[in-house]
Amino acid sequence: MDLLIGSGLAAFTIYAAAKWNKSDKEKIQHTFRNLNYKIKDKEPKHLKTHRTDQYSLYTYHVPYGLVDDEKLQVLEKVLDRPVKVSFEKGKLHIKVYNKKLGTKYAYDLFKPKGKWTIPIGMSQDGLVYHDFDLIPHMTVAGATTQGKTQFMKMFVTHLIENNPEGVEFYILDLKGKLAFNKYRNLKQIKAIAGNYGDSAITLKEVKKSIQSDMDYLLSIDAENAKEGNVKTRKFIIVDEAGELQTDKYMSDADKEHIKECHRTLSHIARVAGQLRYSLIFGTQYPTKEILDPQIKANSLAKVSFRLSTAVQSGVALDQTGAETLEYVGRAIYKTIDEHIIQTPFITKDDIWERIGRYEDVSSTNETANQGRSDTFTIG
Ligand SMILES: Nc1ncnc2c1ncn2[C@@H]1O[C@H](COP(=O)(O)OP(=O)(O)OP(=O)(O)O)[C@@H](O)[C@H]1O
Image (cartoon, rainbow, N blue to C red; front, side):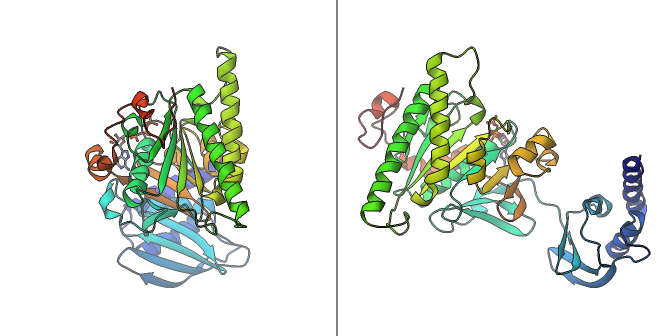
């Protein structure tokens, strides 16, 4: 009943404020009153307003015991603009942005920044980047067609373009190799596996390489890849981890391959970040079974595009919100901080203009790959 009255009041507040020709400051104060956001008769008191080209920041004194509250999220609808509510140093801050975040930002807006840094997207507060040297592993969730694969292609392109001699990719493209097939002849792509057997072989090679890097670092008394001056970073990308599930119709061999894949992916997440290996774990079905707890615990960067339910959002991000994202390419990027972003948009043509020159024409498919000494053969 309380909930019904609460939601009725919130709806009324939004309706009344939309009809009402008052300043944002007045609308906020009335919203406090209508939502009963106060202690006894003490309401938050406006302290100051700071305006920039992008936003107005309203700061309030609040009575002791009152902190930011989820119900203040209605302000976004009341003011019909993006709003960020925070509570810092005993004060309530309400940031009202002048404009809504756009639905498309071209990739070339994002200038390169360092070898292992990729653009993540445009937020209300400007460009957001991710540095794999600071946080090596990332999970990427999102329902189909919400922009997950194009995001992965964008950052593969960025890393190749900006560090062509130092980056390597090992891709488990478990939707039948369709998404990354065109990338197979790029010299930085060391393997693309499209089935369970190939995936297990690919990961076995990665595991061997981790062991040999560890042995090397031990031999020179270095604690990590940075100290040991290791120049290469290896990215292991799983596009559709949901496919790495066993079922009763599978052959025993496939079941064993899948188990092996899980063991190695978990190993990479636990031990290889400091050795300059990055696991990018993508799925459209973030459930507890698919998002392995070890991988989740070690992936301190989480990106989520729109998901079907709040429960999935909880698994992907440890919070709700991904289920309400409204646009393709819109995502929540969460590390210690959290940003709502529009991921960079890049066309296929642009991708190939930027990295097509790295195609090794002598190897046009896996068979031809056998001739490449730096690539192990799968399939
Ligand atoms: N950052 C973006 N900004 C604007 N539009 C985008 C963006 N990313 C993707 N799109 C649009 O959405 C379409 C679907 O994107 P994409 O193929 O990456 O979806 P997906 O979530 O990876 O799907 P799947 O999981 O099935 O592979 C693209 O063809 C493109 O038109």
